[in-house]
Image (cartoon, rainbow, N blue to C red):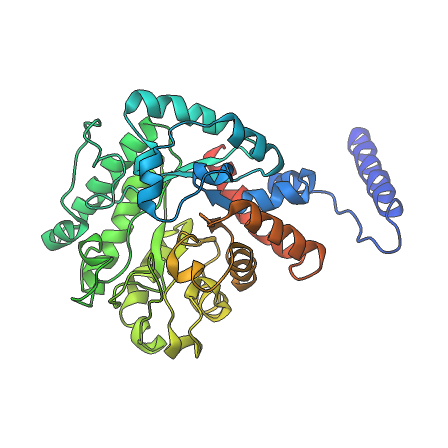
Length: 388
């Protein structure tokens, strides 16, 4: 009892010192209540902002010039260079996504991943490994892993156990190679036969078929030790153009979406998915504007967080895509998406510009530091769950 009283007095005295050490213009320093708050209070503003960026390795070297994805593929950057490390000293980063051109074979992958792990920001390792057309490892002939024709072919079986097997198989080899996050599965409902970007990447054109496939795939990844990410909110299935190259829209109303696209996303949310990726599509009959969903507070805050009750991480689709870069600078897009409710900015066209813009936005009051903290809390919660 005496020890407990002494401990309580120590806490009270420490807390009093913390309060009196603040100037009249400072908020009181609140003792951390849990591990996330303890970590957050130790982080500088730049460290916090860095956790909100997941980037290509090429983004760490501003001297690399490229116009199209073919340019990046031709460069075949497959190691972390000294130039990248020098930039990373000032620009910490929360995640790295590897693309097909960054991966040669198992030996090279085994070399670059420890290089990435040693970067400032302790980045998580991410990849697009959906199974089917978008599979950075399975479609590489130097890797001998199980290949899947498409998610549509799995959906056609009508048996969600096949989606579980797919997710678990993919998750098992991703875990073997030391990845953390798979940007899969696609939760879109492919209702438009003229869709050129989703198509067979989706499990079905029927939400009641797609929903259990999505959750079983997520469970398969989880059981293998990999975190999944459902995409592309609020649904890229009823479109006819490609956000990689320019403006794309869906003319559905929210009521129409609730009866179709939201069935799969709600299933993923109820299952407990940790990440949802935005689509750069405009939904004018939902928002009343042509703004991309990635930058719409109506889509992300009112609908996804408010109406659907989603509490975990919102990550953008690649911000180097034409639907963003044709209308916004990297800085404008990063600041605008965070203002809209995004937690992680994926693949800005110019990472340094985007990072600097977010720092400036906090310093000039455009974005509050508490808004940054909200996102970083979600990110740290995920990292702690991964023990990363």
